[in-house]
Image 1: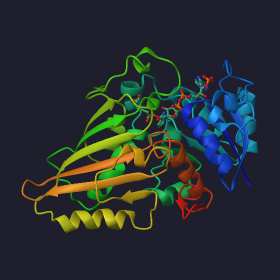
Image 2 (image 1 turned 30 degrees about the vertical axis):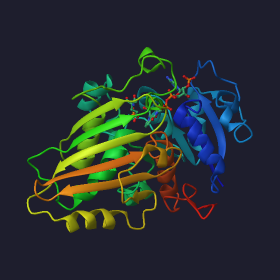
Image 3 (image 1 turned 30 degrees about the horizontal axis):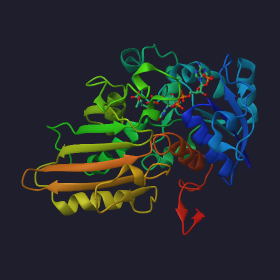
Amino acid sequence: MLKACIIGASGYTGAELARLLTLHPNFELAGLFVSQNSQDANKPLSQLHPTLSGLVDAKVSAINDDLLIELAQSMDAIFLATPHEASHDWMPKLVNGNAKVFDLSGAFRIKDTGVFADYYGFEHQHNSLLEEAIYGLAEWNAAQIQQANLVAVPGCYPTASLSALKPLIDNNLINPQHRPIINAVSGVSGAGRKAALTNSYCEVSLQAYGVLGHRHQPEISQSLGSEVIFTPHLGNFKRGILATITVKVADGTSQSQIDDAYQQAYKDKPIVRLLNHFPKLDDVVNTAHCDLHWKYDANSGYLVIGSAIDNLLKGAASQAIQCANLAFGYASHTSLIYEAGKCR
Ligand SMILES: NC(=O)C1=CN([C@@H]2O[C@H](COP(=O)(O)OP(=O)(O)OC[C@H]3O[C@@H](n4cnc5c(N)ncnc54)[C@H](OP(=O)(O)O)[C@@H]3O)[C@@H](O)[C@H]2O)C=CC1
Ligand SMILES: CC(=O)N[C@@H](CCC(=O)OP(=O)(O)O)C(=O)O
């Protein structure tokens, strides 16, 4: 069994990782950590997340610098489900050991350091680690992830958006004169577990935010190789992201070229499901799937794609497990999807 630990285990994505690693046939969950001064240190994870009762009753421990170095030597896999700044600050201690590191934060996703000052509010100090980090979009970067020691797991909105747009861009089907327009709605768990006025129950009402300035816009553009217009919205539900994306396709594109692009991209990739209707959040929440559907108007040249994921799973924890599966030589979907009542 491969030894894995989670830093930031008490958060929403950390708890999902704990569940997925406990149920995984190839990993042993060997450590759960929170920050040095965490109020939750020494509490059982199942006390913080009672849904894990009987499954993950181990206590979370406070992390410190010596422990980081020790974990880098003793673990096979380290999952960071921590704020961007914490991942940024700790990474040099974590990458120089035996463990492969899977970072769910945004700290190592972008190659251009200027983006961190503009969108993340801190100056990036680790250029060489940014170079080394592999972007963990599992269906699209498998060969690189298999060789990686440091995987930057994509953000939730970028996962929903890129899963819809990559088949088109890879087949030169997007009209370069027109930016794809991404409108996406997220549940409140996308903001993490910490209390804040903007995500408290009585305050949340469907609303756009981060308009023309959200940090996921440069992340999507980097991976797509094309600028986009990205507008996120916060909805008054717990989990899930529904993205509706409008694309002006290249002149002369046929319906069958579009259909083929999606079918070729996702054949043998069972996490992504191509539907015959526009996706619904309820069908992906609590699953590792990304559901896609599209409709094309050949007269106008406009294509609309619907993409749905669970932000905490395909948008974070289960995609991190897909990356770990690949990095340790297993099929990407190992332990993540169900077939005839069995976990594949
Ligand atoms: N929620 C989502 O849908 C997605 C989140 N992400 C990213 O994943 C990461 C985790 O997100 P999420 O689970 O939602 O966050 P939460 O706020 O729910 O959890 C954060 C975790 O990190 C710990 N933590 C907080 N501050 C620090 C610190 N300074 N040093 C070390 N540990 C700290 C927290 O515990 P404590 O404070 O007690 O130490 C907690 O365990 C973030 O980087 C987020 O941007 C990525 C994709 C989707
Ligand atoms: C609803 C909500 O607040 N969502 C988060 C995105 C969560 C995510 O993907 O996290 P990263 O920060 O790791 O990119 C936001 O808009 O900031």
